[in-house]
Image (cartoon, rainbow, N blue to C red):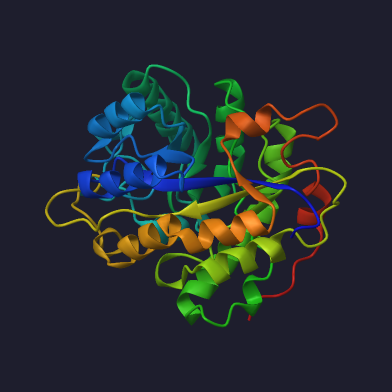
Amino acid sequence: MARARVRLVVTADDFGYCPRRDEGIVEAFLAGAVTSVSLLVNGAAAESAAELAGRHQIPTGLHANLSEGRPVGPARHGASSLLSPEGFFLGKMGFREAVAAGDVALPQVREELEAQLIRFRELLGGDPTHVDGHQHVHVLPGVCQVFAETLQANGVSYTRLPVERGLGGCAWLEAPARAFACAVERDARAAVGPFSRYGLRWTDAFVGLSTCGRHMSAHRVTGALARALEGIPTGRALTAELMAHPGYPSVPPAGGCGEGPDAFSCSWERLHELRILTAPTLRARLAQDGVQLCTLHDLDSKRPGEGVLGEATLETFLEPSPPCP
């Protein structure tokens, strides 16, 4: 990767999920290992997370949530296609199944996204630096169109496009994890059209599906980044995002989005990610490869002639991807 200078945004997801997760995320930010966070406004610790973001001047985006916990919009007052009879979102796979079956009313998706943007502004006092999707719901068919329309209407330009090259060859991923990651990538490729039509922007490359949790190591992060940048023109500075989920593991009953913390947040893998991100090894390898950590604001301030987010990879994303097994 020394062939080109790379600007890397390291985004910690699930900010606001619980105080212990947030403590680790802030620790990583202050260490210079995380450069951006995505806030769950329906998270149990959303208010204290917003205070931390303000105190430490952490660039903060919205982690749009349509799959876990309770809604913040009109759906919370009555029956909704987004919710179970108990009043909770349908879950990571349940929401996907409902979307695929045509059981989700997209106007209700729009209402919830709008409500979460309003709540974000109430908590932070300004607009999000970006909006992405909790459990990648923002790239699902149909949802991605409403998502793009809503962001444009609210003046938000930046999102995440979770297309990670080479997923099919990541033999360390267990079959269920690989199948989910490949499904996310297929949906993300299909979302390029709606995202582009509504003027959304994203980094040239994305990594994080193959390096989540126990699978994160300095070697795998740098390898994934090298694969992600293959075939991208090298005549200018390239941009990339590393998605991460660091923190100190949740301890029930504290945390979650209304139902308590899930197994993902309680796992030792959150601490593993925190340690990998803050250890000297990863930082040294990134620097050796010409990778500079930065924020989305830094990317938006690129010098003339360096291009815009997503410009180099639009055609790359539209090309057929190697099949996942």
